[in-house]
Image 1 (cartoon, one colour):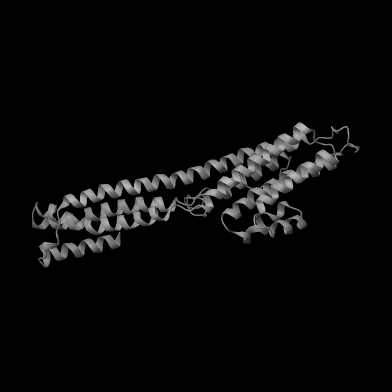
Image 2 (cartoon, rainbow, N blue to C red; image 1 turned 45 degrees about the vertical axis):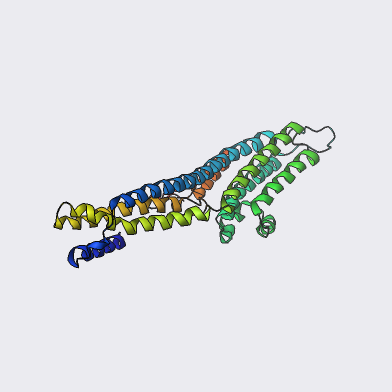
Length: 303
């Protein structure tokens, strides 16, 4: 706004004080350009918001699928050996508790791993992912190019053991849980598609150029209109030019900050808060009572 104000003051000074009346241009072409620019940045903002909303829907699906996974892990994996061809003793309460915790905790690790994978924050692994995995498994997963994808693969391997070696899952239950893993893969793939496909640069770049071209011409077009009201009214060009320029520039910036919903900016999908909510819900299902608190907004921003 300071730049817009100084520019408008300079234009008015040249027109009213120096007498350079020739710098005024007709208002009609400027207004036509403003209409075109408004349509263009409106189209860009719609595309940007669609990317954000799709990202939020995908993470809403992750929240629901996470609860479904925990329910299946707790209710399907029981002490009943349901495989006639498996010679294995019934699972003890300790073994069931360990397997439930392993399946649920690995999923919490997957949620956090997906978040730091999308945000390109591998330095958070020790604090956000490792606490939910065995140390050896954590080190193996850390070295993978796509840790969340391999965590889902590890869940599938664990289900195979439960069905073939321990007989704690029947065929129907095994298929049902694998379908949930497939759903998680689809949700992860949707997030990666948004992350790895940037907003088309031609729209982002030229909307910026068009807005600044319009703001450069705006005071030149307003000079003649306000001069019709009287010589002293020319200076009204400054506040009105600044106001209109600020509106157009703000709309353009809003669209720009919504292009990539997984960059950990103030307008992005609050994946950290969603991961914490998933952790609380799933650990409560396990019967745990010492739970972390839900994340609160910082300066009205939820990350």
